[in-house]
Image 1 (cartoon, rainbow, N blue to C red):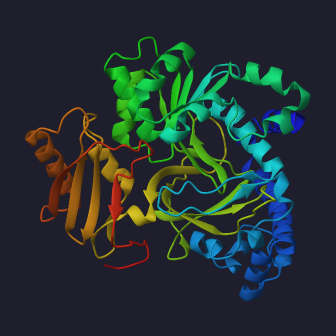
Image 2: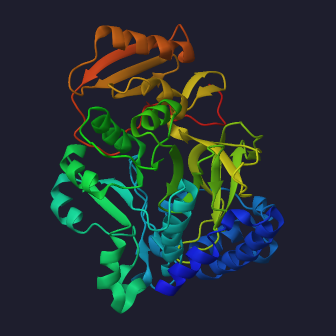
Image 3: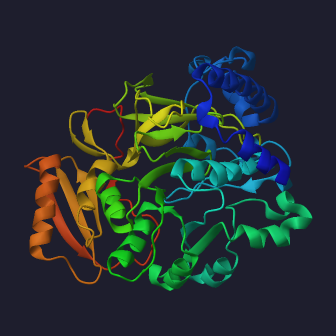
Length: 449
């Protein structure tokens, strides 16, 4: 409902001003309700608790969650969707995983959670990005060529929002008004096809997957987007590495901020303009950062585990996202007192193994591969000590000196003895996010190689 969207936005806009003690009490209240709801309404979670020998009334705090085993995406996907969802499917909003890792899992949000998510995107993103409530936000979205015409015509002012259900009879009027403050533009073949619309929109904030924002930055640096001067750029979907951040900030002349979300759990965290860390949406989830099942110290690599608190349609409990992150115990100068993620380092399966338990994250490698904005690259680990570096042609293949310099920088991280095969590939037809690292080793933070 529109009233709920506005209430969520206004009442929770100061989410970072809640004290840690008050936040903990709020989380525990919502956790107890969500656990009872999951146990009573979902066959999957009912059996999960019973197998663990845990009663739902034994879980009343974040510490109590450790009585339960972790849950993975594959374990959820092995069971029918009907055993995981709760309630009437007609009231759900579909929220499957993106499938960019080769595995798509059906998911859904309740109407109330969808309205919460929309209010977070509208109100909190603007507050963290430092723009006004009525400044225009532009979201860049890749779509497949066969859907381009249909999808671009349906550009909406709030993503995934149940427009008619939320806005009611005011939907035709408010949708037009809303497009003045939020615009989603779709492209399939290249950023050039929507450049005129981007320039006309003149957004205060540009939001998109990091590799797609790079396409816009390339166009702007080539002088193809005159007059484009956003106040902030928000990058999600893949890691915002240091090299990409520096490139975007020098090109657009504004802060580039990292954002972290996952379809099955919603908006997770986002940086403010201080860029000390990502503020976690802790009123809607409890997070754990674990390695070998134990919490990691600030600054150490760990896998993010999420327990959702507000999505009654598909609750998730100790759900391992298989994303590698770092936490920080620093306080943000902005004054918000939420927990902070220092950085999102990439997928666990994209870690590169050096030797023993030493490994390098996708984000660290991206800072090297993206240091030259004229190159598009991906590195694959084929075995310990052996890698393949692919160059995807842009306007022309990289000069031999460029390729050699990049290989040299990679060897300083991967080891001077590392074997790095270089391959030239055709341009990527698919403009979705590019995984800069892949591995055939099925890496794990807990394994020894």
